[in-house]
Image (cartoon, rainbow, N blue to C red; front, side):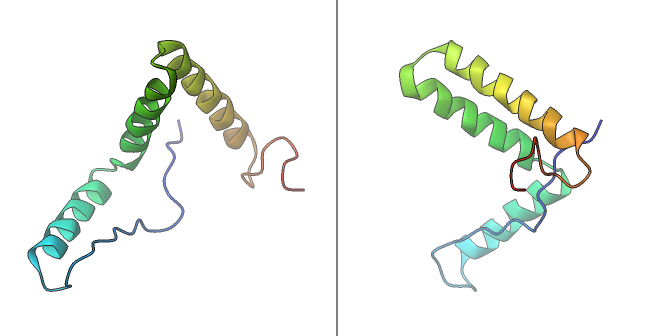
Length: 88
């Protein structure tokens, strides 16, 4: 099974000096996220929380997951990543 990975490196924007503690912490977190491949679970968690908070309904979360699976299936069936004629 192919797991989604970002095409480009993930950039954390920290409003602080490059030599400060906040920048060091952001670089540390970025290293952990990249090494342990935590980007997809974090995106899934944040989007599920967002879907739940819109109407406070679990139906919205299940709907979001359903469309995520459908979109993933469409992307995984095409070698070039273009799904169902979109973008042609």
